Amino acid sequence: QVQVVESGGGLVQAGGSLRLSCAASGSIFASNTMGWYRQAPGKERELVAGISSSGSTNYADSVKGRFIISRAGAKNTVDLEMNSLTPEDTAIYYCNVHWIRTWSGLYDYWGQGTQVTVSS
Image 1 (cartoon, rainbow, N blue to C red):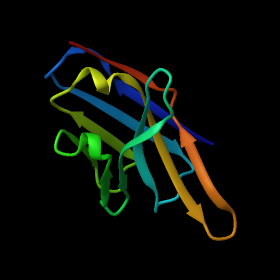
Image 2 (cartoon, one colour):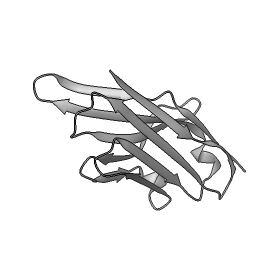
Image 3 (cartoon, one colour):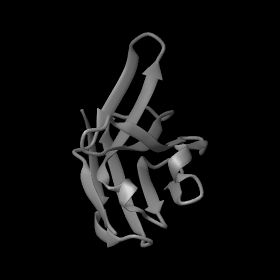
Image 4 (cartoon, one colour):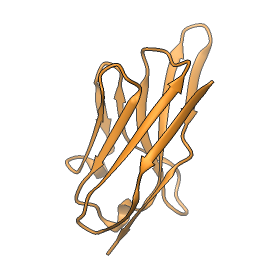
């Protein structure tokens, strides 16, 4: 069993900053990828940023230069530092951890989501 728990989020004015944190626990394969996704009202869920257990990162074009994803070494925790926030960043943010095993396929786990609201 794997649990994914997010913290952080809230209400911030445009131009401000927020930090999201996520911790995954349970039977997690050492080689995994953790990331943050978001879903705004009426829109599909989209990748915001991801980071592998080896430290490789990727970002959505819309957040490059503003958001920073990080994880503490081999720990299954991930933070998302969000700067220069705009109302377009308003969404529910979800933490994800996943990995692929050759013989058993994809393992994919999600947190419950945390609301981020940016006021203009």
